[in-house]
Length: 367
Ligand code: NAP
Ligand code: FE
Picture 1 (cartoon, rainbow, N blue to C red):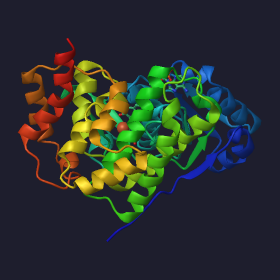
Picture 2: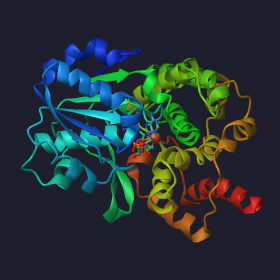
Picture 3: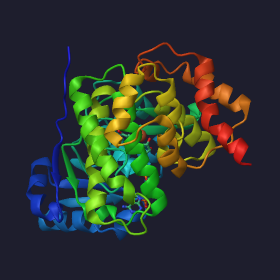
């Protein structure tokens, strides 16, 4: 059986929140805004949401302390900010959007132990979530996932339930303030979603069609990925690519690079996109169906894995890992059944070790 499910209503356009604000009335009279500490204040997204809520006479509280790669402790704190909220508005990159989903679960289930409701309750309900993304990276505005840092396990985990945002509001103006560094790393995260959805056990012609369209859009944005000031047209290509990527991983999940990248974020502080990105060319090499890999590269307008390394991989500095670290991460990854099952072939610990080694050996040879 094949299925495709993406219930989020998506609106994309400049001043879209102002234009469509009436839709918010369907979700209640009290909202909690969940955002990071800085960027949404600068790029206008927070101001636009507040203006809309004021115009609609919706009371609101703000939790603006979402950390990058939010932890359970961070979302528990956020859920205390406005306990009477009837819906939650996440504004920012994947971190605030994911935090908004987790907070929406906690607010809906105030009497349940937090870790149990987040990580052990597949059918947990949530308050409605509205998503206002400001990075063209995670696609969280159209995925049901929330990735949280779990300090006791020294890694990151997806929560157990599924929370698709009710509405995603995309306004290109909010994305133009990203630093080159944040833009490169987040756009590469979107690319890794496209790659890992396409090269995935659960891929179907429905998800593949979305991925192929996403790869083509991504390639159109790519010449300006490092531009000092990216123009709206190129940013818009990345926004659409990232949202398509989100729709695709909502169907298939991600695969080995995401599971393996979590250790690089947790233990070495790599951004999420950087961590997955440096494992991507190794994944392309490992993948046994090279015909499909070649189809993927053709959508990007790239003719070989070597060319991919020269053009895309080169944007991400290598990380110099010790053998014992790579071995430990490979061993832990062998326990991550959720990600392993998305890889359609047998994989060994040695192969995972070699995936880490691929880029790490570049770091050694560059020294
Ligand atoms: P992020 O952690 O949300 O944000 C990274 C940095 O970018 C923060 O310093 C943030 O500042 C800043 N920033 C965000 N938007 C900006 C803008 N428009 N202009 C200037 N700076 C901006 O980064 P992300 O890569 O988007 O999200 C990563 C998280 O998403 C990870 O936890 C990852 O695991 C998760 N993820 C989720 C999914 C999913 O399907 N749910 C998929 C992939 C990844 P402020 O803190 O000040 O806002
Ligand atoms: Fe990701």
